[in-house]
Length: 478
Image (cartoon, rainbow, N blue to C red):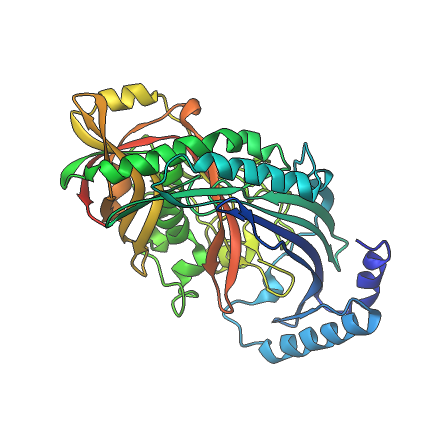
């Protein structure tokens, strides 16, 4: 980050009610080895500034990658014109909102800096791990990959706010695909980039990257021989890597306040949740406790302040099954008169912040995995998301998993393939029978959460223990 950048931003600020400037630079590297053969390196380096102006009740944005005084001045003029055009025409009087003036710095974890390991060493590690996946001739496709992004940002406001943040995002991935005649099955390491965290090369140890290959390949082969998942209403035990998707789709998105307000109707849909539900609605059983927590450093969407300067803080979204607060930033909170969280987030310098999930987690319970299995006479234990479908109010859903095992008479028995389940968000979480202890928690996430017009694809984190649900509609088939 150039030393002179902050003074340039300050000098460019106009005399308005409120102005913020958010500089962001991201540097990406994607390395892939497929079938033991390295693919070309993919790299990117992107930087720019977003200007936001609030004046006389109007709000305007403009972004630029021209980081010169003249480039910033042009962006300021454009944002000012948009603020003037929207004055008196917005759904909320932005002049009534007290914008934060934060002060501080936040540096995310990176014990073994990604840049400290040479390109050759990284490819050697990927190749050796790739070779461990090819354990049988029926493994017909296999891949290992690293995706690393280094981000630095500076947020300054006309009220004297200044926040500098530095983050290291790392998403290792691995997959093995097995084939036998007309049957093809794939196992991945926590789904599509699901093993994403903040940190450096130590993330590989956290997800046991070097050791995971043989087990994934063995499980892909086992699926070739397996019967289809049974069909019926039964207990369902979800591993933490599938809980990630369940939380994301049937808690995270329905509780975004801008979606509840109808702002996302054109593109991402609405929500079955209505404003009157907050504070009284039983979202789940008493065992369900869900927190919004950007302060947990190793998770994928951790930060010190959001992109509007609100300080990160752990908040209970659902407590003992009751809906407490929504996922809404400063503007949405004012429009609905409801408590929210520090979740004004933008995917890049050329997008304005909107209401987004960050780290949305299920808090641990008291059951061991063995105790949850022992409770089940006839049910299914499912792992790793493979497919998802949910309606535009984020209520009716159908999800598929890569791998499952039958639970019979309190014990895991045989592997079954093509496991699926369906339900309604409005009732599903009330069927939560048991929540796993800390040792069952997995830390996962996704770099691909899409929302907004124009679209913003953002990083989200989810940590959860394994969870047992009762009376779930389970079925087999691809």
